[in-house]
Length: 488
View 1: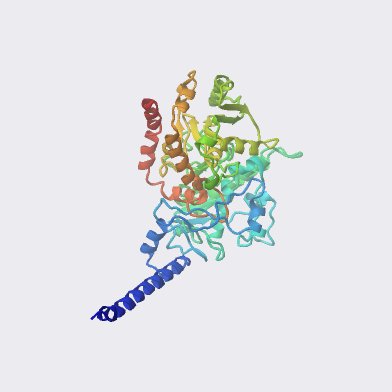
View 2 (view 1 turned 135 degrees about the vertical axis):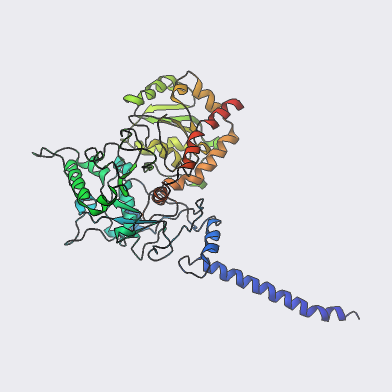
């Protein structure tokens, strides 16, 4: 009788082992399927759910290019790897091969403008009648000028991304795709490198009386006004990048019916540019991104408040010098003049990464690159710019990771110091953690990655018809700051 249970248990043990082995093989096969995002082995809705809830597809830490080595590093390394946590709730990755237009949320028609309007400004010369470089070959992608030119390089990244959407060997999100027929398009993209044209060619050269920048703008206006695509909707479905505040000065009024991609509205009259029509895009930050794993926590950031930059500005920027005289001698405060010269960018990056709070103060215009340098450094931004407009604010609640201070309050003696010293470690850490999550939204890179700056701009274009969340978030900008004061 004692042996009976042992014999009867054999089949059940065998069956249990068989089930366990089968489940293991099923799990292994499921994981292998996930490695081939471009294959349709899984129902698209199920696959989207899996992607949205997967924390990372990459084993390497985020790789961000420095301002002097964009293409050089791309030529020697694989495409940059990013954390793919996706808050948008859509299929974020195209996989290998060109995008299927049915999967894109935005269909874009791009004019084949002559190279003089775009890559020709980078001294690229196509062979014969070739208009575009071969973006599948990184050795043929023209490098963008370094230094401060980079902060307004948005036109460059968006154009590269559109070109790559029809290139089989470039792995990118399928948010926007270039179509060949303008009647199929949701938006018509104008590939004029307006910021670069202003930075490099705004002054007449030699004996010329007119600058190349003005000549190109006049040519662009003539070209667009002659096109059936423009006449069809008076240009309202056209997208033009004019990120530098002085770019497109000659043409902006004549092309004001189009959608602009801008840094802010500081130098635009309200009848030309406004929030319901146009898109605010982030500057390309100048400091290197601090990897999340290496980001110093509260205790390892000895500086309470950091600002380094031009102090004496005109118009709305006068507040900088008022704050300078209020704060320059305070302990735990770094408030000094600084430039990009003499290793200034590296010093600023180190200073921000060693600080708890970074001041973003209005200058000649409401916005500046400094905000995005702070985000890349995971230094909680303190925004003192009453008229600032922020990128993707219909999607992101900036009060979760920024502190907004009205200019009239900031210049009161002791106000800023009392506010920031009153923020406890726990609250600061909460904002710091959120900064590490959203930093990826402000990275420009090629090829673009899911939910990086390029991808987010295309999403913002597609969302322009709905502004409800934007209005909600703008109204709550200062509420969290007021709550912090009440909690003291």
